[in-house]
Length: 265
Image (cartoon, rainbow, N blue to C red; front, side, top):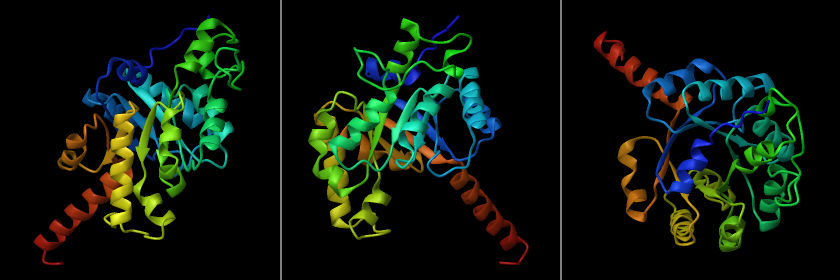
């Protein structure tokens, strides 16, 4: 019998409530458990675009988020988009973050891949015996609704995406957006220049236009003290830190302090 699960991110977006997440590159479920034990995070984003994984890892990450009543998001490569989107949803991810879109046509391709193959939804995700349909063969109205409830988010990280921003935001399947400053700076010929005027102008335009058009933008931050500029714009959705960065900064900071105390640095 198919047992639909509550999509926490969808629930909060529909209610107009703020959300908080964090990023992981690791496939180690214990990390997700540690995040869950805090009781603070609405969902965990697995950055599959950067991390190494197999399909079993996707299943296990989703199992772990569900144990702690958290949602889950998978950020995927554009080059293998239809396959990764559908396998991620099949594993139980409650949201897909699409990368590198440039045009409304590319955005629509993403939406089509992730929506049910049903007359009311116009997608290409059919019946599949994957983790999101155990124990049963799917194909029920509940199965269709669970796929349709997947939150579809999009990186805005290319110059052409910013130029086509209003058209992209008008598309009904675009339910959340994320500014990608690093990619945008490279794409516009300013690699590593997050504070270049062209980058800052595009960043502000992206957030302000999304808020004006009613599409929730999410801000990625390294710590809580970086929230103010986004709060001032009206942003209510945040993702803080990445596991690898958190560990690196801890090891570097504490290692330097210990070596200094020992007279070795």
